[in-house]
Amino acid sequence: MTGHKEMRFIDTASWITLRWVRGTRYYRVHLEQDLWSGWLLTQVNGRIDSRLGRARSREAPSIDVALLELSKIAARRRKRGYELMS
Image 1 (cartoon, rainbow, N blue to C red):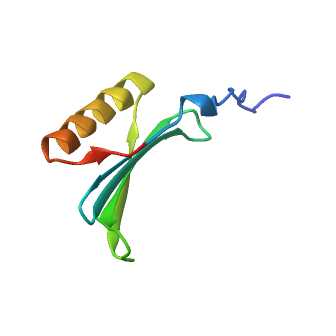
Image 2: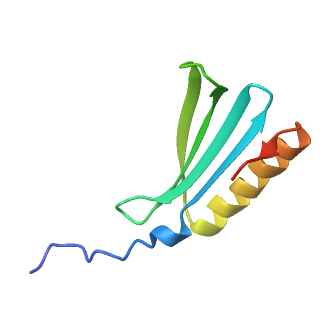
């Protein structure tokens, strides 16, 4: 059929979720591929045992750019005293 885009395989094994904790605070980052083969970096932070918090997502043009951004986030969390939980 013409007019249809070829679906590319989405490898869920390359998705990454990291979670840090410091006292009563948490910070989570999730890297996943969307249905159009783009990459989405989602950051969630807040207080443990609270419904309050913030989530924000942004697109990355490639997996390389997304992994670079993820490493920058991890460095900031370590610098601010967060402990990596997963």
